[in-house]
Image 1: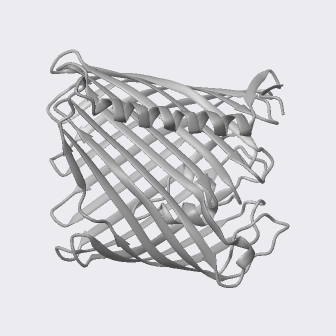
Image 2: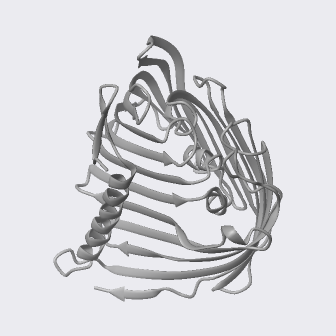
Length: 405
C-alpha cells in the first residue's frame, strides 16, 4: 500500500500510515513525560493512579453498519487504565489511558479484548511570568459502545458525537496554545490545532483538518474584555475535494463573579470549496457556573468541521450542556445533553445525545455509578435511528503511587 496519495489537489496519508504515526506520537509523549521526571527537569511530584472497573451495559440497538444485524444485548465491560500526573512549580502534566474488554450475551461474535484505546495528554507550562504554553492531545480508536463509556457526566463532544454513528473510528485531536500578557489590560494568544478522523463506514473514509487562531483582548473593566479573533482551517479528505474556512470575529470574555464566567466569538464564516465561496455566520459561546453544590456548563458553536462518514466539509452546529449536583459528600447526580448537526451535507445529518446518572463513592478507592444515555440520529451509516443504553458499573481506584524528586 502506498503511504501517500494525491487526491483532488491535496495529499492525504493512508489510514495504516497514520495509525503508525499516532502510535509514534503517543510514544514520544510518554518519553517527554518520563524525561520531565529526570533531575534535569526536577519535577516536584509524580502521581500514578491505576484504575479498573466492571460494568454491565444494556442496549436496545447495537449500532452497526447498515448491512449488519442490530438488536439489543447485554454487554459485560471490564475497563483497565490509569492516570499519571506531574506537578512542579511551573508545569502540570496529565496522561490518561483507558482500554476495555467486552463480552456480549447474545452476539458472542462481537466479543473483543483490549482493541478499544483512549489516550489523553494535557500539559501546561508557565514559560515566564507573563507567558503560558498549553498542549492537549487525544487519541481514540474503537467502536461506538466504547465512545458511550467516555461520555461520563459531561455532554458528548463533537468528535464523540461522530464516533457514535460509526462502526469503527480512529481519531486524533491536537491543540497547542501560547498565551501572553503584555500588561494588566492587554493580552493575546496564538493557537494551532489539527484533527484526524477515519472510519470504516460512510461516504468519506478519512478526513484531516488543521488550522490556527490568533486573538488579542483589551480589558475594558474588571469584568469585561473585548478584542479581535481570527480563525482559519484547511480540510482535506480521502475522496472529497479539499476546503478552506476563514472566520474574522469579535471576541468577548465576561467574568461576572467568582462562580460565573462567559466567553464567546461572533463574525462571518467564509467557506471556500470546489463549488465556490460562500459566507455564513459563525460563533462560539461557552458559560460555566460553579456553586457550592451546583456545576452548570453550556457550550454552543457554529463552525467549520470535518464530517467523516457523512460528506466531507460542513458547517457544524453544536449545542451541549450539563448540570451536576452534589447530593451529599459522596454522591453526585448529573444530567447532560448535546445536539450536533452538519448543515452542508447532502442529508443534513444530525445526532442528539442526552441522559443522566448518579455516582456514589463507597470509600476513597471504590465508587459505583448508574447512567442512562439515549442517542438519536438520521445518519445513513447506522442501522436504526435511536439507541437507549443503561450502564451500571463499579470502579476501583486505589490511592496513587507518589514519587517525589
